[in-house]
Length: 383
Image (cartoon, rainbow, N blue to C red):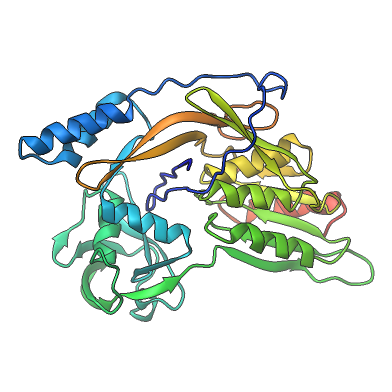
């Protein structure tokens, strides 16, 4: 199973689910072959971890040092608990308090998002609050993945366990004791941008925060439910990626089969194809920004290269590498880069990102959305 990880300013989230498509000659597909030679191989990391274990040292710490020295930008080592947390995230359910965290340039941990209906929201915690401690442990300077693991608590993921948070808002500092709960996430939001009347078409906005399990079908349903003649604004701003298979399903909603992307695993070329029968007629605009990553970039590049959508916003993040996991002797997981994926036109995404057809400054505000709506109107879908 291909593991395309997502490493954002918030919690790291892994991406499983990219099933290898039938192999094709990359030159025949019009895509230049590129062999990726990893900076470090999994057997080297496993050997370092095993040697450290024999010496009574931490195997995962030794593995992290090897990966860090390798120069692999996306290589990482996760504890078994962190890795299991990522798997739960991709299933759209997890045990926690409903906080998404990010770390600023000074190492301080801030609340990035609070899930509606979660224990954190009920306690009055808001986005922007600073997280100082979790169960009396100082979290400043810690990797976000460690903070997320502390918030989630026991490895068995039992709901109902208590966790005490030390928080700060402005100059006010306080503590909150919360009980963890089993939470579900809904990464797809659908609403109308304008009401239809007798003189102008409407438009539907499909906002996708990530590609967790079932996201592709949610998008497909939203597209099929869009009234004939309406335009679609696919908002991928801040989308940190997720399951590549879900992004391919999403692409199938707008394409009538054909190539979505290619990727290589140690030089072995593979393809990802859309299923036939998608909506190829509704006007479509894709809205992106610097937080659009990985699987979301794969989808954006496919729709752009295939001439299916106009892309509006700012250049995307540039995460287009393929990682594969290897379990280490102590149960931790090393995630190492083994290749890259490319758009249907053969463009490399990693380190480059996707350039929009129409660049908009201030893309994190309403100005980008307003510009996207104007473009959509010009395409005959909304006003």
